[in-house]
Amino acid sequence: MNHPFRCALRLCLTVLPAAVFFMGCGSPDPGPVQAVGRPPVIEPDYSGIEIPPNLAPLNFRLQEKAEAFRIEAEGADGTGFRIRGRGRDVILPAGPWRRLLDANRGRDIRFSVTVRDSLGQWLRFDPIVNRVSHDSIDGYLVYRKMPPVCVFWKRLSVVERNLGSFKERVILDNRAMRDGCFNCHTFYGNRTDRWLVHLRGAPSTAMLLTVDGRTRLMRTQTESVPAAAAYASWHPDGRTLAFANMKVRQFFHTAGPNRDVYDLTSDLAVCRIDSAVVAAPPEIADPARLETYPAWAPDGKALYFCSAPAYDTTGFFERHTYRTIKYDLMKASHDPVTGGFGRPVTVLAAAKTGLSATHPRVSPDGRFLLFCLCEYGNFSIYRPGTDLYLMDLRTGDFRRLECNSGQSDSYHSWSANGRWFVFSSKRGDGVLARPYFAHVDADGAVSRPFVLPQKDPGLYGSHLYTFNVPELVAEPVRPGRKQILDAALDTQRTLNCRSAGPAAAASVGAGVEEQTWKPAR
Image (cartoon, rainbow, N blue to C red; front, side, top):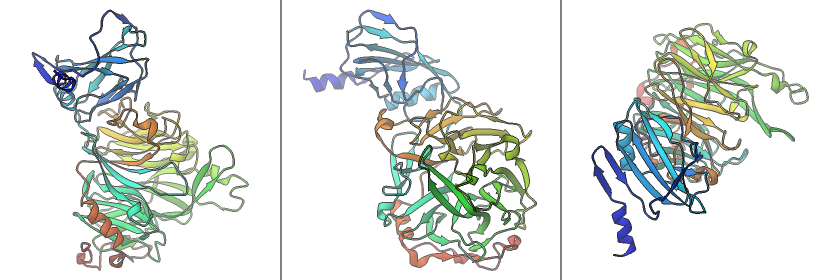
């Protein structure tokens, strides 16, 4: 019998009572085994975590002196599988993995690891124990992938990842868009029939907007809203956007942390996409304040945002003025019928925490507010001390989450069921951001975070790209890549918004027929 045929036989699935075994090739059965007395060190560290029942296999690399291994995975109900192989990379079989998770929702699963060292001795480690959640996670994650550079954006892409497998799909690639820049893709309620991404430079500085699967460019700049839209948030009505319009600057240090970002000016504005009308209501566009990062409440009756006093840029660098800019967490009531805003109130003052608030996001049930606090400013991903905080909106109590690290833990988004969130963390090396997931229960308890699993467990050590702006969505992005690219390049059909005036929030959406919105050719 030839060797390939023997391997094929050993890879077959054998179904036994209460167990499924998957046997790999190339590793003999162990002889005498010595207990190590501790769990194995693995990378990524998938131990002591809660796992969505619809997640791809958690492949990992043994950080032990191992020439061969045997893995036994077992659920509380007795189902499981076994694999064995050479080297240190453990690739879990997709079919048995899915069956193991599905059969053990709400229960623990154990991974027993035995390795053979360079002396031929077999060593048995204490089991790795994880819990399978009752709660599924959204099926897809969309993120921007880019090299860790400050001033160039070659090889920039928006990527969709199927969380139930390892399949990636490029949605936008700037090499097909004359090397232009884009940022901050934003989805309507974890859905992909309405979403947007902001384009900068070539082919246009505009919003690439998809509505009901139809995509075209929309230019939001007007006399009252002079800057391009950024940091957008969808109102629950699916027709109204809140966004920041600001003059932003990046600068560099000769020592210490190498870069900073600050806003010269920043206000909030609203846009009705069906009528192409924008307005800058004075309640959220105060010239004496810098407002940014809008986030609608799930009922649409409040807008959360961050706000700091405007400042004099004289001596900005010499006096380190930028280090004194700290943002309060604010909320303005909103009437969905009239479109009007109430007087903003302070949810959490920078004077109370001594820190600056960024990125507020309300859970889909309206119970919790997830946000960041950092040393200063509003570009928290550049601050190594940035941490995630959770506020109970019923009580106003808030706390620093246990899932934080010693590096920047920043940009985050909720799953549609409000039981998971994903965030960007630089905990691996302090430079590259990776997507991490954590479960949050009905009382606000948060599980130990884990990084997005990859088919190659060593990918994060060699793939020098940062993953940022992670957004959970329930379905594949629509429309297809070609249609999105064609719309991005079709600058002749850009829809130019008109201004409703600085104090005409109530009239946003009036006066222009909905037929203004037409699909790209």
